[in-house]
Length: 128
Image (cartoon, rainbow, N blue to C red; front, top):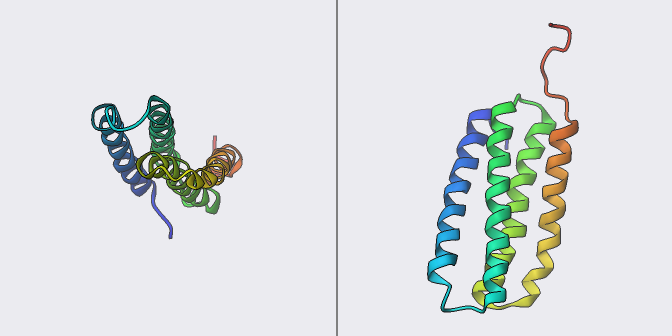
């Protein structure tokens, strides 16, 4: 799967909208259903979800069709799914074993940022 810059922006914006909705759900829908500790876990999931959705938007703004940038985007999506997704499921279904997926999501997010930092951007470096 290869995405254009515009598609990374779209995907990041959609994920950001979902993050806001999930944040509101946590603040209003879960308040009386789960413990305060689980609400903090939910808030952590939402925070990472939103920050990395914005990372996808940034990638789209900067994006040129390089393999490094494409992998960066894929890793952001995978990281959001594994890190935030596992925490959302942990809170909703109270299955602590799901927390074992969270570090893999964290590693994917770290790798995405490192790829963004060190991937060539595909622009012609000889032009002023």
